[in-house]
Length: 435
Image (cartoon, rainbow, N blue to C red; front, side):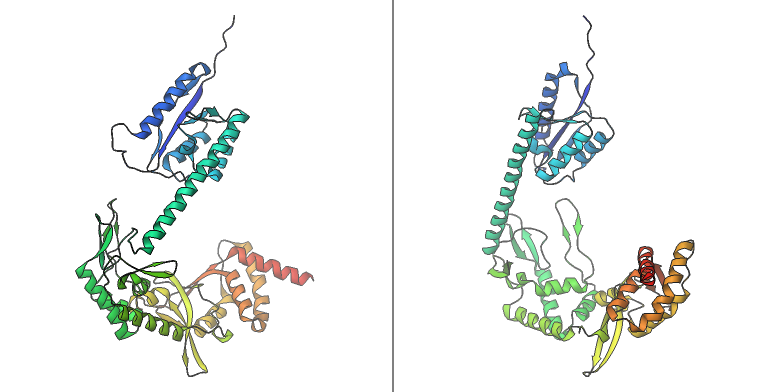
């Protein structure tokens, strides 16, 4: 009787543990999962099953997504045709997301790879196995969502009691690791108090930021358990604004827009904190930019400061009730102070006129087709430009350019063309001409 040769089935064992706790031990839960997988594969030796020596172990990774190094290596090896079967201890080791799991199963099926769970006794070669798998996965996802909801409820209850719920402590506080609460850092607390009082004196977040940086002050430096260092950098306007708005400094904890009394001590008394909030609100109302079409920013977020390599935004100052002076301001200068930027601000009308003057003169090198389209589009645009409303002018500029660089030292403009937008404008003009 002729013996048939059994074709080998190369099996990869995938293991996962959500936390890194206990992974330093000699025999971990990952080892236990792999051992169970190896024993199962040995039981299928008559079917030609062989354990691959490569290990696919994700220790300390959640099953809520697929962004895991070992899983990504497994997927890549499946694409390369190195794997015929994937073995896991339980279904939820591969994924706790029904959507992700469905996509993985479809991917395995496309590459003719079988999926097997050791403890749940099924594989995806049979229709019953696939049905059982989907049922089990639904419960796994349900369990994950229940855990998530319980965690959110626990965090909400803790915040309502004024407890510190973790994360990087803010300037002025350290964390008591035993009691899990914020404690005052006396040296930093003096700086926090100085920031609040300085803001009330100068009535400007930008000037406050500049003064702090000139004196060499920096944001809170914090070293995480992983050894990664956060903070310890110069202040910027946004960071100071966040500090001034943070109710933690007056001993309160905010949850769902409601303030609760905190377990930690206050650095700023409630009267000073409220006075700062009123000043911020007053300044914001006075700075509110009108939506008047005369103050329309044609180049806002398109014009860039070449020296700082960042965008310039449109704003204006008003004299009386009629006269308005429009500017484009470098966002770095606005955040860190005008001394940090050679461009600072530029007259809006002057720069917009300069851009319009350059439109017919722009040269496009190494792309003759794009140059032809641009030359056909431009005369039409210029002929109707003065009749267009501001929003239409803005739309056309965005179609022509991805960005426009402005060099304050030389006054030169650098145009970065929007190839797709130019072709779309050309199509619009051709369509109008055909009517």
